[in-house]
Length: 510
Image 1 (cartoon, rainbow, N blue to C red):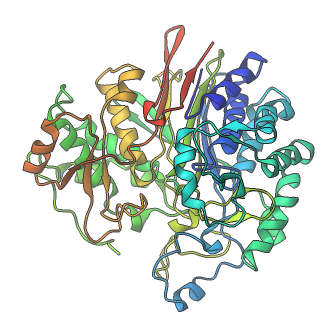
Image 2 (spheres, helix red, strand yellow):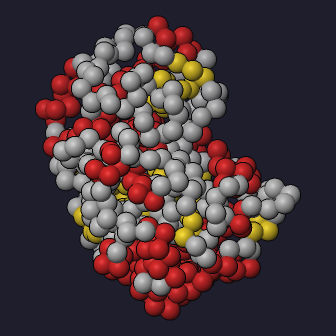
Image 3 (cartoon, helix red, strand yellow):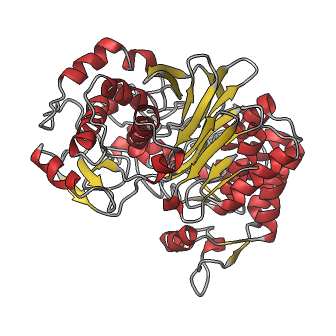
């Protein structure tokens, strides 16, 4: 089974497994198709994280394929120009070396079974021959009407749902990867263009260094299962911390009860209030989910009132997909531009849009996540994988959504592991997220105005008054509540759901 935001990608993943490929082959095939068809959310110019359950060993492997800043990174220069934070759009200094391709190659090299050419063929065919624009792509295209190099999406009349889109530069880049591996990409047309565009930000040595590392996953026991996620530089620890806090609370069984939402909101707030100060590449993930630390946070939660949090640290463009094969290898993969079309910069001639993940860096002198050469910024990407106590795979799940990702994962874990909801109910059920008034999706914990609780339009009506009575600022609005997917192993069968919020997604299996 494969779940993704695009039926073309899910179909490519299923095709890989029908041909004898593993879940890793399926995940790379689907991810590559998404890099072609959903440039408004991800692409070859972005980053990637993955968790893999290996049924042969019952172990979970974790891949951090997030890029590092170039050797020319200079925080003093940005500060001298008057920047107090990293530029959000239009500035190559907020671009790190994209790790997506390195991630594909590592994932395929360790867990793949098919030739790479077969895995990437569907993406190459769609890029060269064309694909129909999805409703979300067509709606997003006007945002880059003035971006140099975005000609594939700048049409007259404007791009409409179903219009054929061809991406010859992306097809060439994918073919170069098949022919020459990472050298074909990082040492080829893309790499040369990135160095020229960077104008001193990047060097050939920066691109010659792999951006993908196998790291130990961060894991915790939650509601009778082991939940695995990506350690720092990812904010995945927040999913575990929120769940570990919630485990010790008296959650009502009825999720229509506003107390259900309140206690989970408070768990998320207590887990994340100091995120800007403690999350960086060198952070100790185990220390961040240490029971004593979280017990203090749990004690601060009041059933009937929103907590007053300390003020110490005041100052999406992502896809998630999952795949499980017949051997019960499970892959939980997330790939990202960071925000929408990313930095609104395109590597000349390639049609590849660059992410703006460097916005996660700090410009505060001496901050552990300060922008600097060869450093990784804090990441919002936080996929999850769940195993039974005996090591068997239970489920793979995750979402896009910037700062809200661990909040959505917390709600999914609660519904799945505590409340016993099936995959369809977990994914379709109403959500809340914590947002800021500025709504970039990446400033929830740094805004001076404090987080707002956004409630999905189809959420229980009692949530609004119940949360307001407890002191929350609540708005019921259309917002980015994540595009989540989940596959669960249920005895001899797989049960999965793709988020209906994606409109064109698919949970496909055979």
